[in-house]
Length: 253
Length: 84
Image (cartoon, rainbow over all chains, first blue to last red):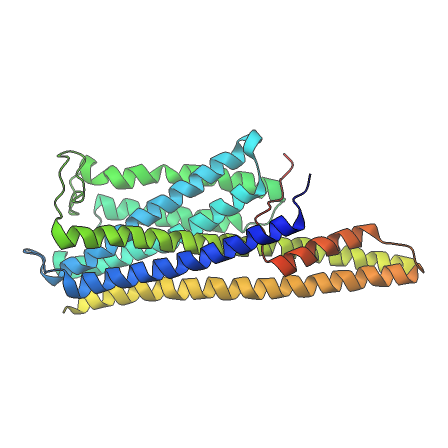
């Protein structure tokens, strides 16, 4: 049975309002993170003011991992015959695209921090290298999504590619443990020592950064999803117009 | 402060802001195109109907109804299930 139009309309209006509230909350959260990070928190004992970059750099990496996790889950749901639906393919594509943006920002913000700290914009460190590989893998995934083909075939091959690319995510996370790395080990919660090395206002600001950029991710993914939905509708509509015109020509002729 | 810190914040916030604004603009533009397309589909279906002097064109009407609903209500949460 189809959903009554009024219920659908009110549901969509509620989603639109929720997205607006989410957008404003995310914006306020990011503004607060920037204010606390730049003007309120103290400089670090060793890094000085450069520590302020770390209120945005780890949240970027976290959001990238989250985005790829969501893309992989959506891809799995698409591949599973009982849950196969176009919306999961769209969600995977939307989440992966936002993930690529955040991975790019992780690399750039890390590079800007690395130049004064390590004396180089880039080093072939295991963490940096595997992160760059992750960026390239998901760029390839996005390119694969654009390869023309029948809708279901395209969606299936994209889902498989997303799952293969996700293998690199745990490798990135554990690379600082597995190999000798120039990059510091996890400081928020070290899996080996189970200790936290960030305290006070620094810890709260970092936590706020994680929450705020996660909200930004949800907002961006929701908008990217809606755009994909409209693009699909546009493609269907083009076909409808062509069919209707042909029918009109046939009738008139 | 520190030039590197400021550069880092500008790059991060500038990129996210630009990406977000671009997404919203593309979404609005796509919605307008979908609306215009649905009118075109209705007109094409209507031309077929008038040429047949009163006979209906069910396919065009159904399609136009669907597109009109999207145009009026915005992009939907009701997904179209794919056949396996």
